[in-house]
Each structure stands twice: as structure tokens, then as C-alpha cells.
Length: 360
Image 1 (tube, rainbow, N blue to C red):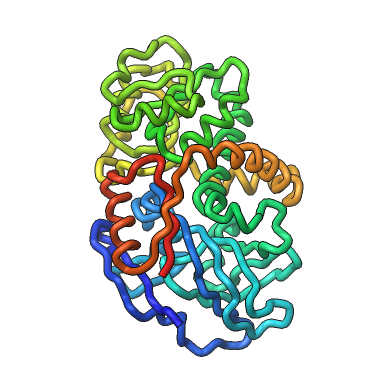
Image 2 (cartoon, rainbow, N blue to C red; image 1 turned 45 degrees about the horizontal axis):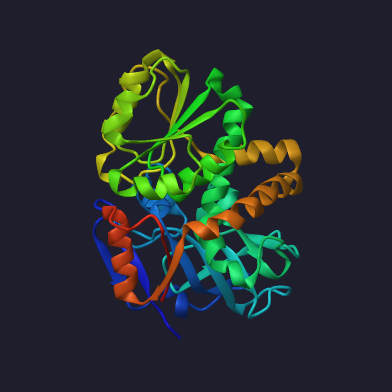
């Protein structure tokens, strides 16, 4: 049985440590626990955001590691390797939120035919959206031949969906234009896909020169400009800024260009994690951190959990049909591959068309 994990130095996320033994592999189960064998998981710029905001947003708290280290959360598939709970059988496949490890021990609660929550004490105060594990045999959004697309895009697209839903919920803050940084990122173009359905909303993508051709090829953005061309945009248009990059210089340029016409500004990602800086004193709307689970919980309370999931599911199916054309899936396994993909993504050298599926 393969046993391994990748840990990150919480004080410097560029430093990693690979353990050839994962404690969850051999620890004896207590009553009410289940051991999961993590099969495969996706790794994207979104996972760098989890690391960059690990302390601020409590992402490190999901899968506690030894002092000073953290396990970066990932989305993927696992199978039940051992179970002490009637109704959860060995061999079941589950989609959900996992550590970068070969195994995980959870304490299932609220078990239903659709899935269950992990009720471990350290996850009790964390968003339930991340604590839920879906049984694939009854998941309407699952097919065996689209696992890679689901791992790479589904959690990101859910965030994209929720940002679009939040903006609509707030009348787009009386704006007619949405500017997205890191336009080649999967969360950004998932949002662009949703925004493209809106009438009278112009969608602007900010990107680096090396990614411009890819961004333009998707035909999702009304305007694509480089980071050095932000000041060529019409500053008189009421605008929303959705920052996927987390680059302090880019954010400052956007705010100083649009000033009072910047009606809403939020940070969603940190693909430029090493350039976040402090930009609290800027003209225009005060930058805030967008927390997708808050909007999800609001909609779930209004529509009911099934109604909300149905709405997201309908949008996901539409997007997934297009997303397969925008990604080249690269599947790799083992210490060197996992470490290299982590570092390349952290350094921003991964190509936008590349979609990495990893395993131990």
C-alpha cells in the first residue's frame, strides 16, 4: 500500500517536504471512523491560493500537520479502504476535498445515499461545503470518463458561479463592466463563461503577454489587455474588479485608473502570491476578500440545498462541455512529479492549457 504525503512550510510556501509515510495509512481506526485511499487529485493555481491564504482563511486547519507545516487541500477522488460504519462500504468512490496525501481518516456524519460530512472536531468550525464527500455512484454530475475535467474544473467553476451569482444579487453594483485579472486561470474564465450570458455587461480580461493568445482563443472576453495596458481602458465606465492574481501592483493600477468609477473590488485568488502586498489605501471601492461559501450558504438557505445544487449543476454541465476544449490533461504520479508541479504552479511557469492530475 502506497503511503506518502507532501507538506509545505507555512512560513515560506516555496519550501516543501515529502514524507514517504503518511500516518493516516496505518493508524488504527476508532469506532465511527473511515480510512480513505486517495486515488487522484487535480492541482491548479487555485491550490496555490489555498496555501497563500492558508492562515488568513484557515485552509491549513482542514488537514492538520506537524508544527510549522501544512497540507495544501486538493479536490479529487478517493475510495473507502477501511470502514467501521455500517452503510459505508469498502470500495466506494468519493469525490471531495483531500490533503496532498495517500490516505485520510474521517468521521462521517449525516450519512445519506448521496454522501456525508466529515465531523472531525478540527473541521467543525470550517465551511461545510469543504467537509462534504459525494458518493459518485449517485452523483448526477459524475461520469467515469470525465473524472479529470471534474477534478480540474468543478470546484473552481462553483466559485466562478458564485461570484457571478453574487454580482447579480447585488445588481453588479451599478456597473456595466467586469475586469478580471489572471484571465487565463480556470476560475477567471469560468466566471467569464457565466458573465458572457449577461446582457449589457462588458467582460475584460487582464493577462500576461505569454497567455494572451490562449485567452483570446476562448472567445469569452469582450476585451483582452496586458497588465501594462490597463490605463488604455475607458476610466469613465462604472466597473467591478475581480482579482484572481493577487498582484498588489495590478490592483493599485486598476484602482488608481478607475478611481470612483470602481464600484466593487474583490480578491478571489493569489496566482501572483509573492506580489500580494498591502493595498488598503486605494481610491474607489475598498478591496475585500470574496468568500464563496458565504454566498453558497445564502443561496442554499433561499433555494434549499437541492435547489441550489440543481442550479449549480445545470451551469456546470453547460461549462464542462466547453472546458474539455481548453485543457490538455497531464497525469503524473510520485514524489518528483508532485513536487515539480507544485513548484511550477507556484512560480507561475505552468502553461494555461495544462491541467495536472496527480497521485502517489
